[in-house]
Image 1 (tube, rainbow, N blue to C red):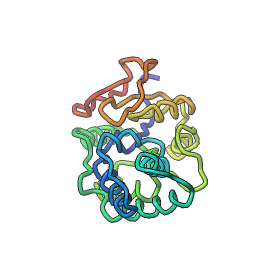
Image 2: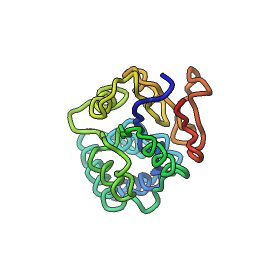
Image 3: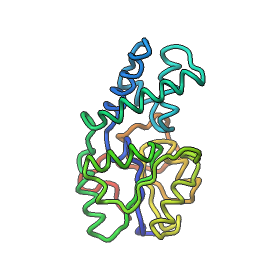
Image 4: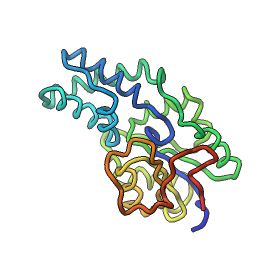
Length: 218
């Protein structure tokens, strides 16, 4: 396949640099529980497996963690993040121009993220990104998260394309494994939140800048 019939993107660390606002919400949560705060590199190392895992990792890093504490912390985190999710968050340079170029070329676009569906759609609305996407697939209660392939396969189905006709763009080992599990081609944005090396990914499937649509579609 030389040209994908559709492109699906991860959100945090791929299209948007959201870690500073994720850190801010985590620190509001931790301060409210009389715990030490965490720095930005620590939060970045916790991103990728969903909000529940991020919150659990914050608790483990700052003390103990059990089911009751985790639910309390998760409620605090979601409330803090919903109140202030775009103060520091921005699309990466070149992202908007790239999305506009793909749209002008008639390529349908989607988002597949482990971010909960409601915050994912809200932040896309607030940042004027929703207009570029036919599908925004976020995490839902009771549904498996990436690297389970089901959410990415749902995106393909909703976009009306086969997995083999689709390109998935992400920034993490979770995204890489998701694409592989779904039978979808993958491109890595290497300046996102990659926490584990991907030695099996060829250099041609990596890009470090969105400027001039560095993702490529060839």
